[in-house]
Length: 432
Image 1 (tube, helix red, strand yellow):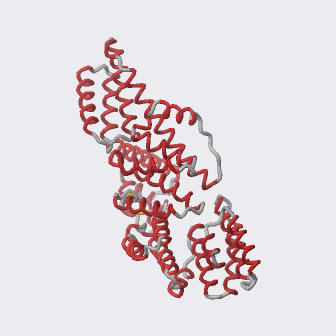
Image 2: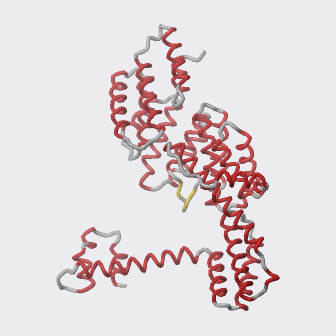
Image 3: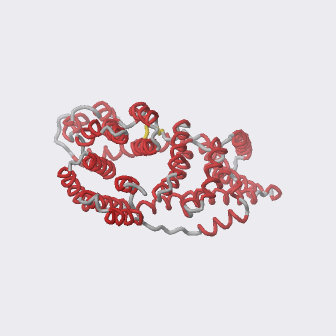
């Protein structure tokens, strides 16, 4: 207890106050430091703190607490108490409008406890195995499809394949038994089909319809991943140059902001902040974007506020054609993230090209090439940025009076699959 009180008092103080010598002296007085004894006390404290954190998490979920109590009375064969808690849980569950994965897991746990309790009491007439089985099936289908959606999203970024045990069977089982009519299954079923078959837009339309109709049946944490699942599909279509999906993704972001699904502990991820701004800028919603940049700055984590704000303000100025305002914002910061760095550098490269600062552009492209080579795991982004550098070099030295060369470069750009700046390059070459 003395160690906890001391650490709490000096946690944000001077570093020296947390040295082993000072901590040990506070606990044991002026005797020689015994590191083993200090480590032992520290280990005890860590264990108690971790138990407290786990208990706090558990106790905040009253549904899980009630089910644990139900299991306890079942083990103790406390019939009266079991029936009282069971009746209370059912009433609470019936009042709940939420029908997410957790709900069906709880239903399975509750029904399974009733089954084992009835068996112990010899009440054969009350066997409820169909309810046990049904809720287990629903819960498993939701989670299998949900994880499959995560896997497809990760696979697209990192080009890494995953084992998908029983996925085909689950998809077939859901379709055959029309389990997609259950909202929680339907959301992830159509989400999976959308991500697995991006060219079949009918699945995304079903997903979008379900999100709009059933979003009240999910917790905010569920809605966040559901919105991101739909957004990932839109981003895939956008990366395939289907510009129609710019409006779709922007609508999803705006709807998510209205529902506060992107805020976690009142914090907005800097990546979500960036992506919302990118979508708005591509649609030239400049007034909305400018307001968003300033309004949501304070929702960013403190350590990322200034860099993310400056980074996005620079993009805003660039898209409006105010290069003089954008350039100093891009040049003054070295970002701690590969993607921030590369977007900042490629935006700066465009500015140099527009201002005909070819020497500065040459130096920047060379430094970008070295920077990319140093990166290990960035998936398809490495191919994308290598293509950007390659075509930027060709654009720099292109004879714009040679129509054949221009048309040849246009065709090469059009035929390149991984190239996020395709539209910009074609615009510089003059579209047909």
